[in-house]
Length: 338
Ligand code: NAD
Image 1 (tube, protein in one colour):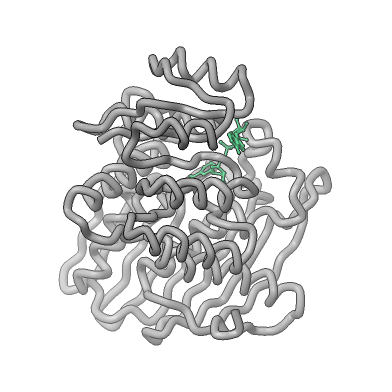
Image 2: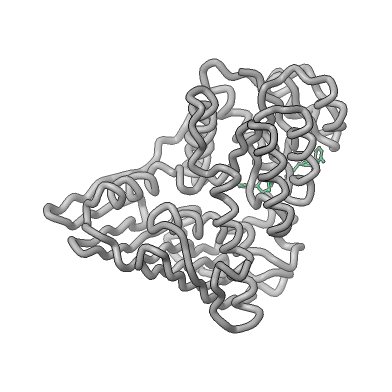
């Protein structure tokens, strides 16, 4: 399976490492408008075919799928180029700038019969996956309450300076993952209420968001995110869980400790491995990149729809839009409004 990658920036390096670890997959071409980044990635991963222009790369062809690792502003034109070239697509989150673009991108690929998956990797973190599997397997009966929490004071701005510049920050960049974990655990959402704050004066967007979700399944969940939380020990980039069900409770605590109290009680260390190319504390995210890319390849081979297909991700993306609307208008928002 031959792939091409567009956007050789901060995060793409993880994606290139992960592709190299998957049997039967080769990245045959890379593209970046920034010549220095293109050269650096090409040299590091031994990829000779390098393009500054994505249109030129698609015109030359020679690959079955494209991995779009650029920031959000370029996603729609690049997905549309991929549709015209009739290749499968994996695209980074946030998928789109707005719902209209997101729907248009899903429709463009659907018309080709190809696969579109959003790189929504947090639900693929092995610790989070262990919790999802336990809940889906009925370990605590029917869940009725969940808290999905990400609170940190880690400096994400030095690696990703663009995060300080947008008028939207934590819900769009990080909350999107945490909202997606809540969907993976409890299903789709009917209604959301959100409040936001900006604590760090050096950034433009909100760095604290607290969201209350009513799921169609009857679960109420609280999704709370902060990059203004000075805690010791720092838990970046762990997502913590507290779930109550009709038959018990599940907790995913700091340090990757999973406690399931159901018919029996089990405490497990679900710490992720540190892959040879990974570094702490990012290793859980880096492992999830490998796991989600393996899932993409498995789906292409079997013809199954990916768990975070473009179609599926419309519902996570709608939660982001609804959360901002709720915070701006100080009211709860039905997802049917979007
Ligand atoms: P970045 O700015 O470091 O890298 C993006 C690269 O894309 C740059 O080198 C830029 O020159 C290139 N680029 C932009 N438009 C292009 C175009 N039209 N053609 C060719 N090259 C183009 O950004 P990043 O921090 O690597 O983030 C990239 C994406 O990954 C973002 O959407 C971000 O939200 C996402 N991300 C995801 C995770 C995760 O865990 N899933 C983590 C970090 C970042």
